[in-house]
Image 1 (cartoon, rainbow, N blue to C red):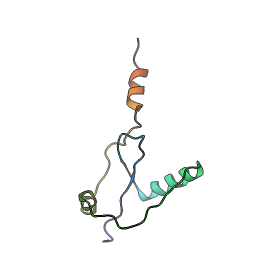
Image 2 (image 1 turned 135 degrees about the vertical axis):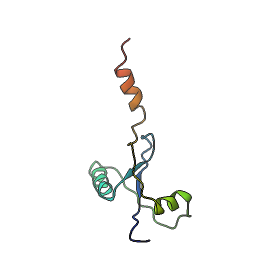
Image 3 (image 1 turned 60 degrees about the horizontal axis):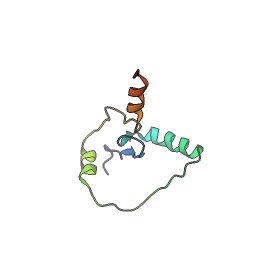
Image 4 (image 1 turned 90 degrees about the vertical axis):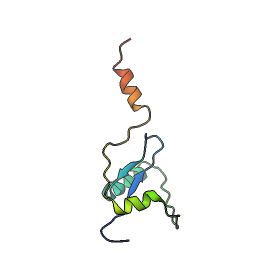
Length: 84
């Protein structure tokens, strides 16, 4: 891998509305926090087939414009402000 490009990490938490792009620094902190909270962390190694998304991430600098929300968070905020 060319030293100009770095691996990209994503939080694929199923409770989020979509994948969250995370930095190397945040990844280390996030994993340490999860481990401290008692979560299991699984590492999967091996050769995966090439995919178009990985090729695009390899040639383009990407930055997430908006962090995904927790599923139901928008509805909860909307209903909290609703007066019946």
